[in-house]
Amino acid sequence: MTEPATFVIVGGGLAAAKGAEALRQEGFDGTIVLIGREPHLPYERPPLSKGYLQGDDERDTIFVHDADWYRDHAIDVRTGVEATALDPAAHEVTLSSGERLRYDKLLLATGAVPRRLNVPGGERVLYLRTVDDSDRLRATLSPARKVAVIGAGWIGLEAAAAARNAGADVTVIEQEHQPLLGALGPELGAVFADLHRDNGVDLRLGARLAEVTDTGVRLADGTHADADAVIAGVGAVPDTALAAAAGLEIDNGVKVTADLRTSDPDIYAAGDVANAYHPRHRHHIRVEHWANALNQPAVAARAMLGRDASYEEPPYFYTDQYDLGMEYLGHVPPGTAYEVAIRGDVGRREFIAFWLGEDDRVLAAMNVNIWDQGDHLKALVLSGAPVDRKALTDPDVPLGHLVR
Image (cartoon, rainbow, N blue to C red):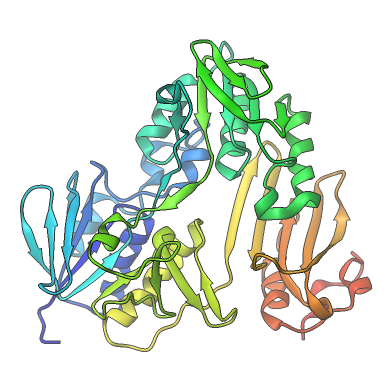
């Protein structure tokens, strides 16, 4: 590559900002253009369903960097502009302004978009993905309001907790028999069911939405839940439209190698949109969580500069709901046989859960209101070695003693 080169980043979230930051940290002194369709500087999304939604975090705290940082690091940030077409052969991206921008390397950080409800009255539903969405939801949360939340996944439950903390009456509608069933399984999903019921949520499990009405929601069994506002948190889908139209390989996101390279050698992808090959697990993993958007761009930046790089971090996510704080680390592939072992007191919501695979190997771990154990939990997950189950669940045995 003959510098000065032009690297283009498409996306306006954490992964995009961290991609620009990593390129500068790695010594790239060419042109960096960051394209974001929203009118805001790149920001982090977790606060939108946590502290910012609840009014605990100020708006300025959600942004990855302020305007001065981008100016000082010579990042050409184009906000309120959308990338409408990508031509890998010509190395050009077309913008909604009509400009055709040439690139030498390109990083896709387009993220994901909320899955929409296809029911009568669905146009009344509120979603939570952008800061503007969060602002609209904040305006609905007050003691005088009744809120219905469709979906008991992470976003749905965090929105429900924010609404209850604001004093609103909350009903959560979930078609599965436990919250977070796909993410945590029935044993740990029950912990979150109890948490929300203990905080006054009307949690309706095994229930299907039939219609959004003027006064709330009607369920498939004919029952009705009153609501002034309806919030949907029924998952998200990777925003692959630009990549697919450009002919890149798509499979549950933009399919990338361990160094986050797409099927085109000059295009990379990171964050929610990237379905990345994980060398440790020997298959592709796409995770819609903050840690990937935070950490993958540094790997992509090194690879874009022609250096050896591989993303091997275990999946990680966290949540804060009421007085429960949780961190989850690891990966249990779909269809994997496992057992859950517990250290601590589930009833008091102070415990660590371990997902044990064959030969008592720790596939994943979740600490609930127990802190300062993250390094030990990560070491257990990464070791791949069998553990003594009795010692694992004995709180008197330091976790550090179990790491081989």
